Image (tube, rainbow, N blue to C red):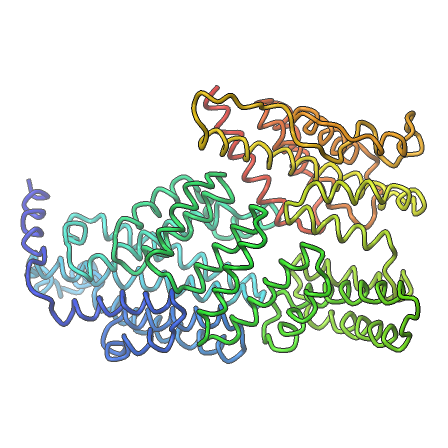
Length: 630
């Protein structure tokens, strides 16, 4: 009965009045958030400036503007400003926490309990609201501190801050569930602000920890919390429904990424993203996300269009514009348009103050310069001076790569390894085989599978001439990957076709357009058939043919003597995880599970290990769902 009475009392706190000064403070946060999504950071700060020193939530919003600026313009000044802003929020939130926490136990011990015992239900409710807000803000601020530590690769301090953040969220949730706390029954702007931030904090924390790969298992153990992705998405879904609120758009953007990249619910993800862009049509951040999805779909021209729009809308954030030039360059690079890639990479390398992508950009521009050298050599009268100048540019770029390599970044280490190969092993040159490998990698990532298969066919003789285990098995892996991606790409196209066509029109699930896929084209001297003869034969392969050939190539990599592969050892667990994806599609759960166990148990320390860890998590999640269905 007591709880019911409390709830009745709390209903009296539901705000039915006109907008108060408190409402104005919290509404200013919503308006500020709109400016953030449109990368208008100065306007975002101006909107909340009158309230920053008065209100802890506005102070937190000010910190988040600094965090955003540090993210899109990764300079030391912005990083330091963000750290100072975190400290200011922590101080203000801690003061509110001390003021609002329950002192009954201490006061009773020292006979100070009279005042506390006289506290009215309404006053206690107000104090509980202050307490939940203080703890939620402390969770957000400490989580931001963790992000800044991780950004500078200070993982131990970051992990400790992350653990503290979770403790604050736990404490806030416990106070929110206290019958004395009226927040859940309130409709004020403050209540929506607090609830959305707390839900987002708890949901994001669950999501982040649940997605950590095996390589970062130590971080999970240090935090003392496993995380649950399904619970995370449920909570984030609830957060999206508190609209308008400071975390609604954030939550939707995370759901977009999860649906697209993890759950393969691409249509739902696209629809949700479209709704966000409809709300923020001039958002560089959302246009960048859309461009990334288009690139993942193999729609490079459309991706480039959206990256250009993102640049146009980022006029106030110069460093973001430079970073987007790298993304434009990457699109050109994937299409093997090396000459067009160079000026975009030069803009990025010369102007971007961040280390993000810098090592990789320097590696790529070296490949592009080398392409120009080869083109010059094909001329009737090559300009040797131009060739020497271009070669010196490559050497200069590659010699500076170590200055931009971050310890825990796989692609930085990849760029360093490749540059060292150029400067030492290859005597300042890329071989014809190297250039073929680069082109195949680009075509596969850009979803140009037929062109990748054509390049792979063309380079068979080169692989035989440079027959090392690394070259051979890398060729086999890339062939398997091109076939794998083509298979799933065609499956997706057929599914879309079925949705769009007349229900009475039959669909041929088997035949695929003429492709460069042959029955026996592995560059292995021990093969019984003549590869060169079979490579001249083009045929219509069914999806089943493509899939089986992909399996054959991946199995060769997984079943080889692993010690034979020295530089590209990462292809072994990746081949196993890709096999698992095929077996999951076929509902062959035992084989899928075996492949995932193999990939997960592969000795740590290989390139791109974190990315493989994410793939393993994704496929394990699908595996568990399929097991439940059976």
